[in-house]
Length: 441
Image (cartoon, rainbow, N blue to C red):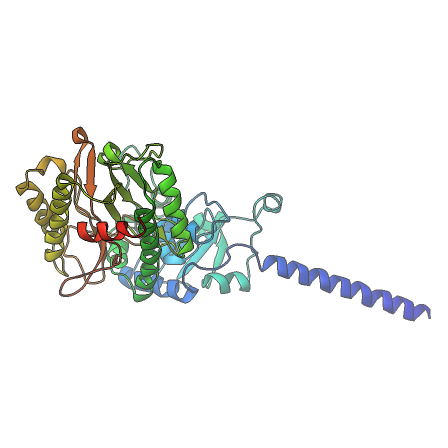
C-alpha cells in the first residue's frame, strides 16, 4: 500500500510537471517574434539570397528599429526600418540586427535579437527563447543574441575584409548610423578590413514590386478608395476638418485598412495651400475647396492618393478652371510615363502645362515619388524607371492669397509600354466628382 501511495504521488507529480511544461510551451508559442509579416519566412529568405548573390563577397550588417510599440498588428511594419523589414519580415522585435556573409561555407545569415529580460516581459510582452521554434518562425538558420554581434562580425571580417554599407545615408547633423560605428571599430582591430559603399543595392531591388507586393498594395488602394468616397459623400459646409477626417478614416478601417500610410491631411479653403497641413479644427465653408491627401496601409504597404473637391458639391467656374489645369498636368505626365523614362522628364511634362497656364510659381513640389513599404519608397529616380515600379503623379496649384489649393494625386504601376492607374474608382475629373457628390444630396 505504501509503495502504491508513493507511486501514485510520483505519477501525480509527473502529470503536474507535464501540465506545467505544456502551459509553458503554450505561453512561449505566443512570444515574439510572432513570425514574419506580411509573407511567410521563405519569401524573406529568398530576398536575402538575392541580396547575397549581388554582394558575392564581404559582409553586411543591418540594424532594425530600436523601439517598436507592440499591439498594433500590421501597423507595426511602419515602425520597423524599411530595409530591415523588407529583408526579414520581423516587425515586432525592437533592437534586432541582421548579418549577411555570402562567401561563408555553411551559415551565411544570422538574426540577432536582444537578450531576454523576464522581469520586463511581465510588464511588456513575452519573448521567445532561442531554439527550433524561433528558427521556424523567422526562417533563419542561426538566431543569436545581440551581445554576440561584435564577436561575430569581427570573426567574419577576418575572412571577409569588405564591410558592406547598405545604408542609410544621413545628413551631417544626424547621428552616425550604428553600423558605421561598428564597422569603424572592427576596421581598427582587423587589419585589411574596410568599409565599402553598397547603398544602391537595396533600392535597386526594392523599386521593382513583386506580384505578391502588388496584390497587397491593391488592397491598400481598395481601402483608400472607400475612405475618399465616404468623405466626398459626407462633406457639408459647417463641418470641421477633423469630423470629416474621422468619417474617412473609419471607412478605411471598415474596408480592410490596417493603418494609415501617413498622417491624413484634410484641409479646407486657405489651409489647402499648406502642403503638409496638420490641423483639423478648421470649419468648412460653403465656397471652400477641400483637399484630402490620405491613404490606408495594409500589411505594412502604403498607398498615396489626393483629391480636391468643392464643399458645396459643385465647382465654381474659377475653381473648375484651376482644377482642369491640374488634371491636364497630371495627364501630360502620365502620357510620358513608361519603363525606361527618366522621371525628370515626367516632372517636366506636368510642369510645362502649369507654366503655360500662368501658374509656374504656384507649383512648388515634385510631381511624384515611389511608393511601397514606405510612402516615399526606396529607388533611384535619376535612373531609367523600370517596369514594376509604383509611383505617384501629383501636380498641384496653391494660392494662399486666394484661399485655395488644388492637388490631384494618383498611384501608377509602370509597365513596359506605359502605366496603369492603380487608384481607379475614385472620381478624378470635375464631372466625376460632381456626379458622385450629387448622390444623396
